[in-house]
Structure formats: structure tokens, C-alpha cells
Image (cartoon, rainbow, N blue to C red; front, side, top):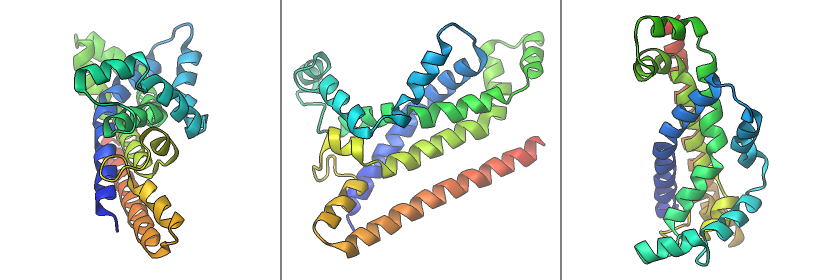
Length: 222
């Protein structure tokens, strides 16, 4: 069992969730309540990583974040390191690749809020931020939690884009999914089976907790 790879995967998943949580709330709410020209295009861009092959997105990230790119040169000048083939590069790739999982469930959660409740909050003199905190978030909470759990579980199992952007550097970019692949390539099926079982158990537990929490909130709101 490669505990270093598992720990790296958990760190990557946690950082991705922490960064995407406010993004999912802001963008989910914006897309749920606002109507504007070009909205279908914005929603399509959000969903694009879901249908693109990971190698395609990984290639564009390599070009965009590489040493010779403006972003890569800026990063190297400030931090004296390269962004690709680093943990920081994995975080950037994971954020972009998980946008559909983070935003769409949150958007559906906000869309389920009756318009009358938001109008009543406005009539009571609540500011938009107070309405978000006191009225909208408690009702959209299952959607937001589902978004974060899907993001966490998807990050743990991501393989293609991690391999493209980070490679397989032990302790730096070798996640549990990459470690499983390496063990299979080395014909070490016992280690691969153990790591796969651990990954399945963590993902199953995480999703089960989400369903339990959603059911509890549903009963409370009902």
C-alpha cells in the first residue's frame, strides 16, 4: 500500500474542495437566478471538462502552464519553480477539471428554491448577502454538499489529467490512481488490488455520508 500516494490524493482532493466551495456557491447561484444573453454558452463552458477527453484538457494545460508560457514564466519568476509536474499544477488542473461537478449540483440546488421565498426575503428588507446566508443556503445546502462530495470523490480517482500535467513523481505528483497504474504495469496485482479496494471504500463512504446528510436535511425542512 502506497500511503504517500494516498495522502497526496487526499491533500489534492481537500484543496480542490476548499477552493471550489465558494466558486460553486457563487457560480451556482448566479447561473440559477440570472438570465442573460450567452448563458447557454457559459453553461456549456462549465460542462466542457465533463465531455472532453482528459488528455485534451491536459494538453492545453501543459501549453498554458508550461515553462515557456506567460503563466509559467511568471510562476517561475515569483516562486523559482515550474508549475507543471508539481503539486500546485495538479491543484490548478483539478480545479478546472472538476468545475462541472462543483457548479452544476449547486446550481440545481439554488434553482429548487421557490421564487416566493426570495421575494419574501427581499420584502422583509434582507440584503442579498443576508438572504443568501439565512434563506438560500439552508435550502440549497444538499446541492452544495453533493457538489463538494462529487468533487472530492472525482479528484481521488482522476487519472488522465493528473498523469498529463503532473506525471508520476513520488511524493510530489504520484496520486493513488497513478500508483495503482504503476503497480499494474509492474505486474504487482496484489498491491494494486489493495489500493483499489481502499479507494473504493473511501469513495463509497463519502457518497453514503452525502445521501445520509441530504436525507436528514430533507426531513428537517419537510
